[in-house]
Image 1 (tube, rainbow, N blue to C red):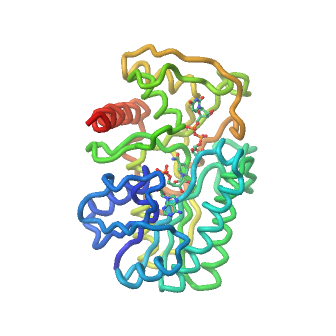
Image 2: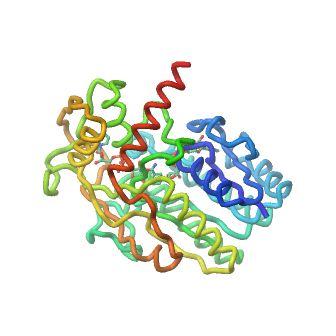
Length: 330
Ligand SMILES: NC(=O)c1ccc[n+]([C@@H]2O[C@H](COP(=O)([O-])OP(=O)(O)OC[C@H]3O[C@@H](n4cnc5c(N)ncnc54)[C@H](O)[C@@H]3O)[C@@H](O)[C@H]2O)c1
Ligand SMILES: O=c1ccn([C@@H]2O[C@H](COP(=O)(O)OP(=O)(O)O[C@H]3O[C@H](CO)[C@H](O)[C@H](O)[C@H]3O)[C@@H](O)[C@H]2O)c(=O)[nH]1
């Protein structure tokens, strides 16, 4: 039995690949078009199939050739403000292409699917921390594009007798503690990544998007989950499904929120650099606060996070950014 990881050359997918290899998993096959991912992020024992998740012939051939029983679907477009300016591009990448992938995968015999969903499906939640059974109400095309895929997967699983785990990630950050992978996307927009670049002098300054939100310091609150902890959540989800466990939808977060200004303070403190910060207007599509109700995944899967510490997350992100800068100069 082998696992197909779509988007495995990307930030989170590459950590899933490392987690599978570290756990001694059989064959790991990555399907990635390298649009935002990097082949060098993959260990040599992994098979990389370069292509599009919507190429049904390629998907079916890959699944049959490698005897794949489980699919972990990470490939997507992921930038919330881009989804506001290019909604149809996001519905194509995240919804239409996922439909094609799910159809081809089920047709070729895949039994289990783990899907990378997002806290963005909750929109501006009425309850914080957000429980999984709160009715989703996304406020941007990114969240809607992912929610539609959740629904397709749920319906297709019921109709075709397969099982799935939908993982709704909150804000993913940090890097592999052994320094093998991290967030490498050029022009990335994620707060901790951008702040570490400012600390290392690779950006002139950091902009804070909105200081008039109804939060204690006026900036947005987010629940930052360390990327290897998140990869472990996928491993336990995979084991659950292979043992015959039922389909589940689970939040992935620590259940605690930090404001944008608090995150900046931690990055300044860890790096020792007082980089310039500009207070700017709100960014389109941003909810004011989003924090995970984090109990269900622990109860259902026995997931135990190892890196629930913002200073550790920032330290890893800084180390990765530093190494990436040196690598790119070579
Ligand atoms: N980063 C976060 O904070 C966050 C939060 C919630 C959910 N997610 C979800 O996690 C998943 C992974 O995100 P990431 O941060 O690793 O992003 P990423 O951009 O680093 O990785 C995406 C990978 O998918 C590949 N890809 C994109 N479209 C493809 C296609 N059509 N065919 C084949 N490969 C394709 C890219 O080349 C890249 O390697 C996404 O589904 C995203 O929606 C991310
Ligand atoms: O330079 C920056 C970058 C971000 N922010 C702020 O920091 C917070 C976090 O922003 P990110 O861009 O890091 O992350 P998002 O919360 O927008 O989105 C992330 O988490 C979501 C779930 O909460 C989605 O899953 C999405 O894929 C993922 O990018 C937001 O309030 C944003 O306005 C800034 O102030 N300045």
